[in-house]
Amino acid sequence: MSATAAPEPHGDGHGVRRFLPLVQTATLIEWTGTGLFLAVSTIYFVKVVHLSTSSVGTGLTTGGAVALVAALPVARLAARFGPRAVLSGVMLLRAAATLGYLWVDGWWSFLLVISAVALTEQSSPPLVQAYVGARTPESLRAKVMAVQRTVVNVGISLGGLIAGAALGSGSPDAFRPLLIGGACAYVLVAAVFALARGEAGGTAVERPGVARLLKDRPLLGFTAYNALLSLWMPVLNVAFPLWLVTATDVPERHVGVLYAVNTVLCIALQYPLNWFYRTTRRAWFSYGGSALLLAASAVAFAAAATSGLGRTGALLALCGAVVLLSFAELLQVGASWTLSFALAPEEERSAYLVLFNTSRTVANRVAGPVLMTGVVLALGTAGWLVLAGALVLAALVPVAVLRRTGRPGPPRGDDGPRPVAAGTARTG
Image (cartoon, rainbow, N blue to C red; front, side):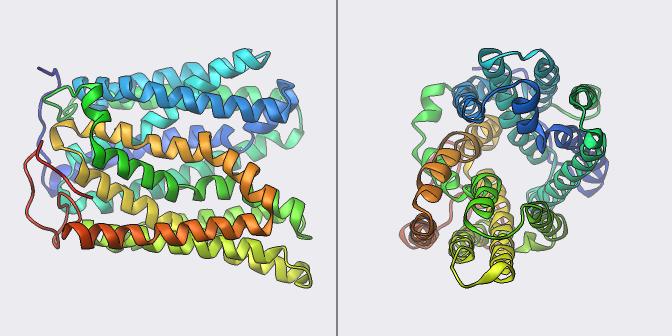
């Protein structure tokens, strides 16, 4: 099976210095555009489109499920044409879908648009990761991705500040320039990648079949495990604000303050913490640490509703929970970069990363919100403790994997075993 994307070298330090401004500029533009609408999207759907909150929730979950089904075709396109070319196409589709929000007038049109948005949001991060992997030496990938995620958080924060200022008037018409601005940002990102003539497109030399990807048990098992540890996303975005409002005496205004704590920690610490997940062995232990931190965070959330704590005590418990969750997020995200690079055969990296990234969609859009509202919040304190117990058990998985296999998988660091050939059996 042939491919149109030519192999590209990993490049030296000088090549990386020329490459990084390109991808970081594109990332900043993309996520600033995303931040323009991210924090206010639910308000738009309810107050402007006049959908019920239950309709919005159902649509978001259904759109996430559609995006999961579409992941395999995107993976095949990325394997055939390379991540850069597919990224440009994804960004143009994202621009069109963002403008599509302006014409949403009911649930079905909302479902159509949100499905397209979910597909593009799911596809962009792994394609960028594959592009970085193709242009960056193995020893620098964790550092480069840490910088990338810092830029992502800066972009989201910048877009959110712009959105907050624009919506200060309280007029529904204020949403229109935000959506148009987001669409323009995605078109600009598409142009940045499309015009990067000096950068090769991808490393794919073979187009993997769908059946082959679905039969890769290490890939599927790792994807499922990553989905479990990615539950920090619905905990932060769904369970935390609802728990603060419904189960504690803490004023609603503190939701924004605690979100800011999370954002500042992620911007400040993602790069400094890259030592903890720079190699495959460290990355596995970072996964275990992330699970324990998230379990401790769940216990702290439960404690915030304890009678007798008072408003100040509850606020301190919530703050501690958000700090613990932030460190869990930092370790989980960083470990996922290193181990997903290690698991994917180099000649099929784009396809593997796109499929692996469906774990985030499952956690954030499909199963996570239902789990948070239908189990954790429905059971109250007991729900948080059940979640904590499951995460403690999940923390044992890395130890079991390393003890059983004696190796953390195809190495991507200085403390791993020798590489295995592409196509041979992989563990972990």
